[in-house]
Length: 260
Image (cartoon, rainbow, N blue to C red):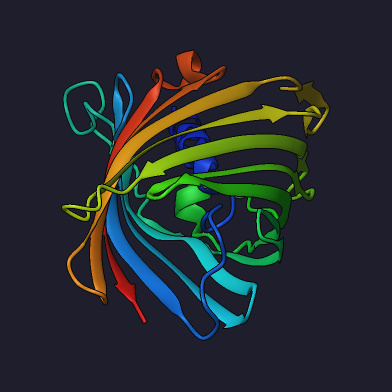
């Protein structure tokens, strides 16, 4: 069951295995830091994480980023510690970072590359912690003042680690934001579709080609001033593996953004 909980967390986090954003690269020598908390649950599990991300535009049209860095506080069965399930897993620890770069080579097109760094705590992910690559093309467009659309299509590849290989995956995602100028509030809605393009090979067993997950999120952001902003999301994820891992995953997160 502990393995299933870890898998559920991996599926739930799949929406974050992508670029920092898929909207235009900002001005040179500008950036931001995001810090927040995320709580997630299935029918019989829950998880809690402290999250951190950052991006910096080192020169015009070129952005470097750090995503996926988190500290998992817990990820366990809801009845952990009760009769029949007296032992709670010791699975708090670091979730490692993804280092990314984006280059805006046209006003509406951006090339992106992410590198997954295998520095996760073994208490969080177990013995499987591979290097991963993710390459994407992004399309972004402002349809009218305040109405912005961002999207990306990308391929991921996870290298073999501890006798397990996931291989190729496809991600397609998009988000629509609308800024209400009179009050400064920006609500948004977005969705992501992930599908495995190759079998997962684990020892002699193969499984998983064609398995998919659909993620939907709604949220909003509000600038307190030029330096600080707050934002939050409600997330729902529906995955092929969900039934064996406690049901579909849902989550909420809240973040503080510091612009500089």
